[in-house]
Image 1 (tube, rainbow, N blue to C red):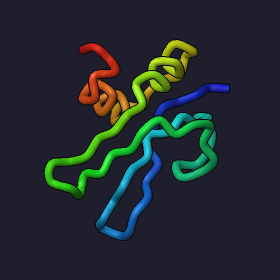
Image 2 (tube, helix red, strand yellow):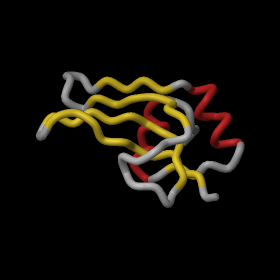
Image 3 (cartoon, one colour):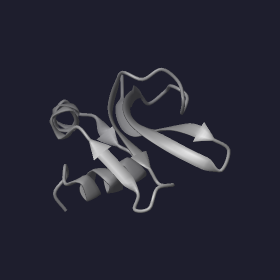
Image 4 (cartoon, helix red, strand yellow):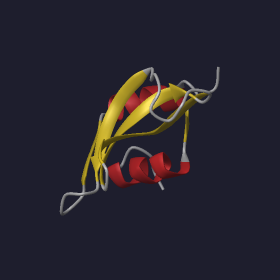
Length: 82
């Protein structure tokens, strides 16, 4: 099972809100997830980003691969060193 850290889109049309989740790579974008490790709200000014760094580091150590967008957000949150 290939595990990925990626975004799950929520919110209304033209008002997105994202959860940063750990999910099997074969599931749908908004499908079942294994764990929720944070959220990202780009509609606020400034954008709100909250990540549980302990959980994120645990999943990264266990081999979860972040998507490109999730990797950028984890770097911004200071979970991944640049």
